[in-house]
Image (cartoon, rainbow, N blue to C red):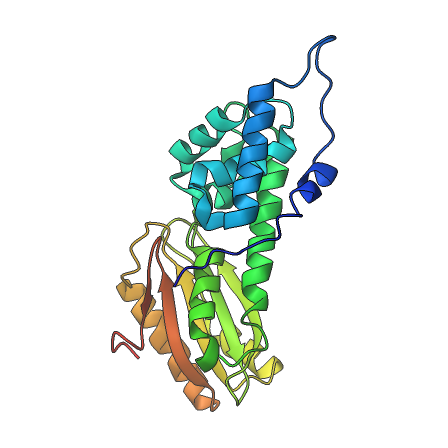
Length: 254
């Protein structure tokens, strides 16, 4: 099912009013018409067809327009995609690595991180305080958005009430490219503090392959044992890869 969003044709002017202040050009020089016209065409296509009407490099150009209002940004968009693979990879890249790309300054990093934060907040709003069973696809989308492109491992716990409504989503630990320290005692302690009745564990594999390691399996078993003692249900452990996720429950590991 297509997810393209339709917009009113009267809305493109919103971009013009809200665009970042333009840097002064040398005396006697105006913004070249090919840049001005190209930007107008991209905005029109986006407003009529939504994000699905644009390839990654053009969607990235739209973001860069605000940070670099007086220059052709297509070469920079392509350089960013070459360095970080796709649109999501660019948004999720650490600020320090973004800054290594020629042409990327503080304004560009800020714009990219604002868009990333907005995406995370929107995805999170679609699952928080919702029943997990009825919003499972949205939950997977949120986990992919928040974690799939991280360059280091992160371990999160989703806390649910007795009706399986998601009441909290909290990162518990951050690690290296292939390891994250997790303390089962702290996980169940936090569940008790939140009066949670069930848990879903989530962590990412920066390698892109969501196949669980033996350490992942052992850690999950330890958390399940600790949760069982306190009457807390461990529903699942999701491992987030670059393009797909793996469910311990579906794989028969829980």
